[in-house]
Length: 345
Image (cartoon, rainbow, N blue to C red; front, side, top):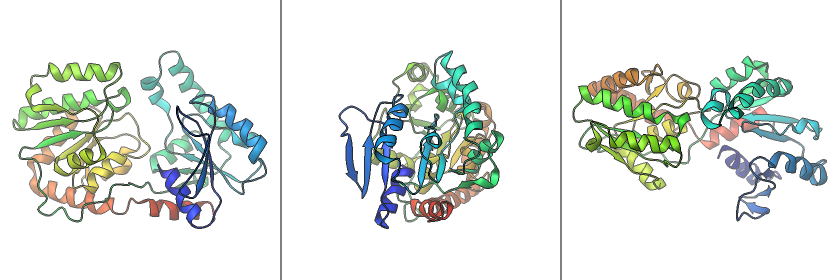
């Protein structure tokens, strides 16, 4: 999303912008959108080879600046484009390999990532959080060569949180697909523990549950001693997601790792503070005890934080207000200004 928003703003200022990316079923091979061109070649894995071939044939001498977005695997454009270039990282994969890929592919990816990062370490880079910058430094990049640019959210912050009505009962919300790397089961366990202290607590969960982990999560909900107070909503529309954020009391986020906790900032924009694990990305999108609470990576600690937050109305109101105010500054316009400064446009 950040890339397309940057592309749109570059085009609006008169720059020629071309994205080369992977294709998908039913997609046009070429498309003009928001003033920039999109070229689609190859699939999820073959895109790297097809991009090399397309760029060498059609774009080798065209760009003034190359932005190579590294989404787990790099394009290694330095091998075939002798132009000023910047690597764009949302996050490194690292331990996520073991949550998203089967063995032994997970181990191969985990061991290979530091190797190809070392090959890229001489290039200037853009990152969306301080956590990602520190991750890159650990793998050989020079700190001064990495610029952190703001993330942005599409959801407009509500005008005011004063008098905004929440659900009748205290409600924990969980948003996003039910996947291993999101550790949604930890949120369920935290809810069950917290409910022992707050008997009226409810839990609303949205997101797809298509894989093995998601089905395990649904089974756990079904057999939870508090199943009647848990509502699984499945996939929800953007409007329904926004409504959950507006009326829920607190959002729990337990990911293994993020580039930036966008769901945290979106919830904050709708007046809902977060309790999150102390991991990359989430510790960037929450300021502990100012806009939300950061806990150790265990359901017991998350449960304790949820209870603490919901029982202390003064603290809750302060965190809610601060989070909402901060969300107003996490914009694509700020991201674009950071981006232009970083690449000297």
